[in-house]
Amino acid sequence: MDFQVSLDTLWVLIAGMLVFFMNLGFGLVESGFARAKNTVNIISKNFIVFSVASVAFLLIGWGLMYGDGNSIMGLKGLFFLGGADNSPATGDAYQGVYSAMSWTGVPLTAKFFFQLVFAGTAATIVSGAVAERIKYSSFIIFSFILVAFVYPIVGHWIWGGGWLAELGFWDFAGSTVVHSVGAWAALAGVIVLGPRIGKFDSHGKAHAIPGHNMTSALTGGLILWLGWFGFNPGSTMAADPMAISHIVVTTNMAAAAGALMATALAWMFLGKPDLGMTINGALGGLVGITAGCAFVGIGSSLIIGGIAGAIIVGGVLLLDKLKLDDPVGALAVHGMGGIFGTLAVGLFAQDSIAPGTTGDGLFFGGGFGLLTSQLIGVAAVGAAVFTVSLVAWLILKATLGIRVTEEEELEGLDIGEHGNRAYPDFVQTDNMF
Image 1 (cartoon, rainbow, N blue to C red):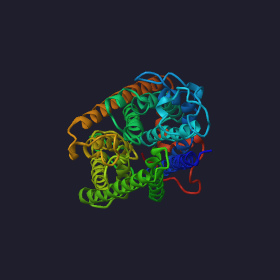
Image 2: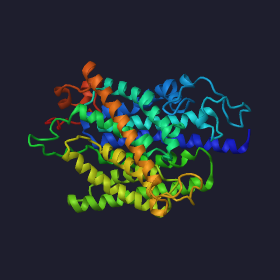
Image 3: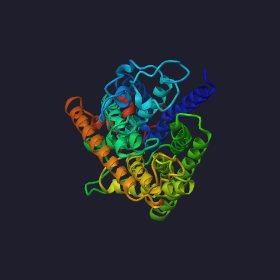
Image 4: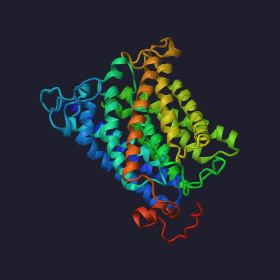
């Protein structure tokens, strides 16, 4: 076997495992930001969602996203059938089934695994935004729909050689493909579900519902930060030392800047350096740099991360004003952060960093061409994902129902949905709303 292929494959699989490990990070962040009485439900959703995603992506999503077809969707390779590896290690001739993935020489199964963990991440984003009132069964069904159909079709537009790729839209590791898709799907769910009991009073004023375990939230945030070192540099899908090193640094600096900016603004406007804002600020910086991590300079990554951190603080406060109840801030982090990060490519990209890809962004003399393509991509993906997700949520609401009963919500979903508690030795005291 060719040594370079072996090295590339090892790198891609390790990076994919880091992204898989982010499921733990999401589970800890989401459960920490929620109340104790819903802990089992939230961590169970984060566990089961990757299982659902694995089956959905294998059977349907992979082929729709990367199979050869037209500018809208893949039409070949469903059920993971057909198409030999195009890796030199296999000695097989490429059969023209997954042409969009022919640029990387690792085995087909390595390509599939790495893209699978990204698909699972998109579904996991939804979990936090709809926490503390969603029916477990309806969440599972929606997750399957998202990963089998919604995520891969819009993903095909960008990473599968579809119409946005032809337009000149760039998203290196998924600010739009993964994060915005998850957030648009979550937004539709939040609207259809409505807010948690007690979140808003009769005058529409938002009331804080504190998370029960900030140690868990912090641990999860750090795991996500670690996982992003697989998420972004792993998207090279090759052990390219210069590219990987550059991406690791831009990723890290954006996270640091996001955390610092969110902390400072929370301190300024809320009176205290709120830990939740600090964590989400770092995550916002990570989401913000994901699209451009391979295309922008290190200095630019600091600016992108700092702006993303500011957007998160403003976004969380804005969502409350709009009466959109998101217990973990996923809409701000993954939605607003993903939109800004995608547009940031059009502003900060430098052709000298990744020659032959994006060209220069607006701030580096490239004009408005790249930014225009990014704007079109953001709008198209947002409109498509939100519309289809809204229809899916409404159908589920009209058939199976998507929200637990008022009694179950007040008691906690751990008992009503799962029949046990995360902390059975402690007295439950938070059932007043």
